[in-house]
Length: 532
Image 1 (tube, one colour):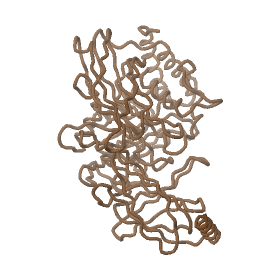
Image 2 (spheres, helix red, strand yellow; image 1 turned 180 degrees about the horizontal axis):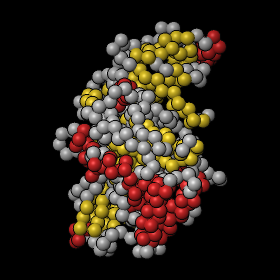
Image 3 (cartoon, helix red, strand yellow; image 1 turned 90 degrees about the vertical axis):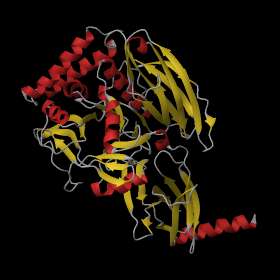
Image 4 (cartoon, one colour; image 1 turned 90 degrees about the horizontal axis):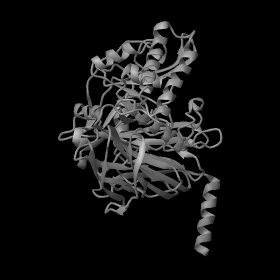
């Protein structure tokens, strides 16, 4: 008791004096002892966040300090694989270390005082995805180009596509952004099995003809050079992008022009793990609330949607597009550099047979051999094939789903979705693994009577009640012609196009309005063979 009281008194005196001391440490692999890069958080005894620096002249520590609300912030450094040091007031400091999705995070409380010995912070893997042929990427990064290689290593990303061209105003051509110097359409090899493609564009239009008038955002990824094109209209951008081998990625499902550009631009990718999903507290709970579909059962809380409501709205919009015949492949991006979120928090894993190269990875992304995640992992096959497969005729009538869902924390549920409906829910076995994680083996067979698409998704509930998910790309089963869209889905797209035509009249030119009219006609035609 006396010893405890003395320690409490000592800590109180140290905090009141707030002496600045230097804390030194290093992050290592728990198995091999090798130094590791990481993302590092340090909170001092006074509650303030401290930013570490590298203790090695050859090392780097890149500060990231972005806040969107009192409880929505990121205050960390990405650290190279070298020792670090940080100034902190005497007293108890809390240190958190993370390295991508495949290592257990580590949080440690350390007593800081004059002469505090160097601390060792061991990180242990709970899964090694490359051993299964899976490699991760972030397709939406706004960090300085010179910082991206170090950030990739500290976040365990194999591929990054930073948006070095960023268009904010309608009718202005894409020009190189301030975050990039002279960029060439060439693969940058960051390290073994780590690749960066530096020429990508975001069209994110907030003003039109000099006045505030939002259109939305779409990415052009894997470009072979600057497009130099303005938008709207959007079709010329889509044609030039596809002619050069680039991919179009829908940023978010609820932008003003999203339902228009999907059919008109023939968008390739859908950012299913999008940049409003953060490690920190969810904040954008009423953005585009005015266009929330009222008959889709999206969860709301008062005058806003919940974090689950936002995720579910994204899922259901993706499913609605798939039902309309637009076979976009899912991807994940963060907008790290703009929002309070680490690069790769939401990421896409692509399955690559044999050697990993950038070109093999981007080909796999385009083919839909992928899943997106904010936490858990899905290692599943459909009739022995990866997601992205297309089955026809009798081969499409029965699909056996095998593999596993694995997670750092126990899973809440695993679901099979067909044409937007949850047709089977699997209660996770959550078998403990030798690496301190959990695994559920899957062997489920679904029988189909009509043309369908299907996906597997799983959910991991956090101690604070928040949700992390993994979601496979779809497989398509062609039996009796196209999948039939649901009436409420296509009706929503029709309403959105009608609303946008009203909103844009007097602002957009005739050829620009014509693209909304084209999309409206496409949805009206789909409605003629929709179902309840």
